[in-house]
Length: 350
Ligand code: NAD
Ligand code: PPY
Image (cartoon, rainbow, N blue to C red; front, side, top):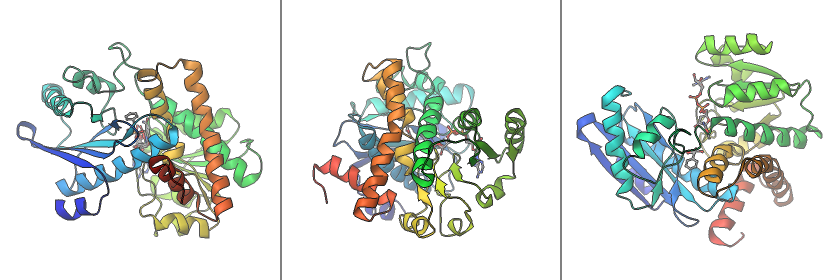
């Protein structure tokens, strides 16, 4: 039910539209505009129910507020969900994106959009025909293109910082890293890890994709449902959310979790469950901010490549500050990161 889902959320507003022509529920979730206009990608997905779509959008928008605050960019957190009956193609997709662009434009800058699951830079080009409040258009259309490679670079730096914290050195030589999902972020991450001398172990529900990359990198791959159980130094979730749960945490055989997926913890208590198992968790919204740094750096802040790269490397320092605060205050890393976000949003420390 929409009522229960919304009552449990602490965000600012949700704009809802049912797009009759495509039978699509459109939810624009504005979690916070405290630090600037709410921004976050548009996820297109087939959900079991509109309430499930709304729940996903709300959680993702909340995480965007934290991501923006932690990355130190002048934006708030938002996310949009297009709950489609099936993923549209061709003209149906284009006309739906145009109508969605009109919805974004009607918000007069409260919400800025970008790519997320199942939406691409080409969709942003279409949306941009109706609104200027869009990041991540193709370079041909004047945007900065896909942010996934930058996200992978940021995860790589964060992962190295987490390894340094857990093992006393950030040298990745010989370190085993189980990468769950080798798509637009997990793929380049696996390559970077292999280049740095680490030993990636890959898995993807698209087993062919995992096998081909493993063959190319000369590393191992396992079936997707076994990656959580793999003995490794680092488990790197780069597929979907909620992979760290009461059910999966006891199965993990790693020292560190550091990956790209949004909302990795199924529930807040999972941060404590990880800590109790002696697993160092690098909070997702700290580690996966590379896409934000790329899009906002190039398209809003007018930064050059050098500055964006410097900021991507800075993810390692930000994460180290989180770990230091966690140790100093006796908190899990997730709770320490949340406390830093809270301070940036309210100007107060707790
Ligand atoms: P993607 O769709 O390109 O890749 C995801 C991959 O995971 C696919 O290859 C898919 O087959 C695989 N997969 C799905 N479910 C799986 C499972 N249960 N086990 C193993 N593999 C599975 O997506 P992406 O852009 O690489 O993003 C990966 C994650 O990172 C997502 O959670 C996304 O929200 C998050 N993220 C991405 C960006 C970005 O810039 N692309 C930024 C921040 C966060
Ligand atoms: C994400 O990082 O999850 C995003 O949604 C990407 C993004 C980055 C900057 C503005 C809007 C969306």
